[in-house]
Image (cartoon, rainbow, N blue to C red; front, side):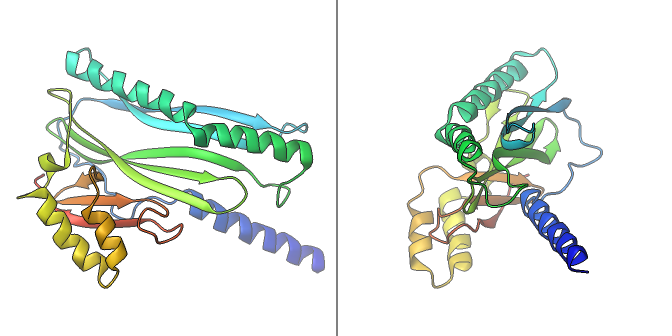
Length: 235
């Protein structure tokens, strides 16, 4: 009976862990089925660090859309995304996962037998019509302590190769609309509101009629939790 309880507890922990790691924004919807857009495929590039038993104890992976076609606009965007992939693997977070994993393997610092460190990104289409696309991206980082999460968007006009800005996707004056929404979202949290107010470049993605302004762990001084609030959009 004690053995059964241990197995049940382990399975429950694994379920809760996977649920947290595979979380996607609740606002995510599928692109409109009748949308006319250039084709794409999701590409995933991964590095794994294994212990002496061959068990993967550290993962760095990057997922991104690769758009299909030979136009100069598509080539330009794919080149930008390939550069973003390189920056991801060259980042301090990626290097930290590699070093921390190797140290934990060598000195047996993992919290439990199936513990795995990671720095990963996952993406999916939130909007796609008439070659205007928005992909949400969720990044997750864990190295034995807290689990940090970040959101942002990959937003493009596939006809021109232009990366869409916040001014391109929000109805009216973008800054004013964001601050109106932030005031409702932050309520009495003056510190968080001031951070939103002083943000120079907003992370965002969008779906029909809505733009989601994204802040990751600690960015609004709310600990590891993410903050996402919506503004009326043009598309």
